[in-house]
Length: 316
Ligand code: G3H
Ligand code: 13P
Ligand code: ZN
Image 1: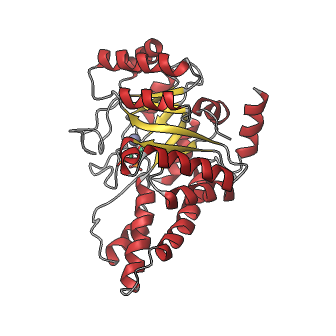
Image 2: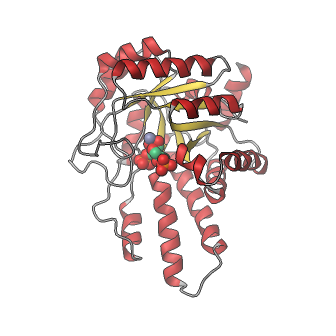
């Protein structure tokens, strides 16, 4: 069952967070669905511009439709991650996506409002939810590093949400994209998160990007198998639920999945130098990724919530 991100947030707000996981290929798709079935969790599938270009946007759509048949009973949203205006319109017009993110956070404040407003109008006309971003995280956003994030200003957040009518807001509260977070020693700014929440309408959903935990043991295994990720670090998983209790309803995790992929393939190929059957490490990855997803859903509090969300959506 494909639902909007807004429908997921109505149930999750203030209690737990929905995991938003990026997919690029069949193995990630299978692992993600399996992990969410195993943990009985609703979830958000995220598709970036890069993912849409990697093979073809139509292939991703076909894989997701097939996965929903292979794993009946799942409840999820299909969401564009870090979209520009043109890509948002393509997703809105596709009739497949149930949520889009317009990321005009690199633009000047008033231009960000104007672009976001246009996307909201087009999306709401067909019942799709819109996530927008204010402030800048390091990693994917140009010229912003993990040490130099441009944190969200609560005054601006209040005005931005009022003027754009967006459905959720991605805030820069200290996290950054990728495997090298908090290199300046700072953590999540919970005080800022609370201030932003208090300035927005009651129950307004917030989004935390850059939420991978970059597990130490995963990094150590990658490095032991020939990798070079020295100094990698991520978000403390014990901070997911405290963030959820303060209004974060969507927690974005992509890098951690890449680490699982890298560890599985590095270890497999190192241990089996004569191996050329990519399905062997691929099978291991699907199982390991499913276990990883289930473990994250437990930490986010979304595990076991699929029936509640389904009942909520069917009743409304
Ligand atoms: O925040 C960005 C996501 O991790 C997606 O990354 O643009 O390389 O697909 P990507
Ligand atoms: P990570 O790089 O921490 O996984 O964040 C992913 C993300 O924010 C996708 O939008
Ligand atoms: Zn992001």
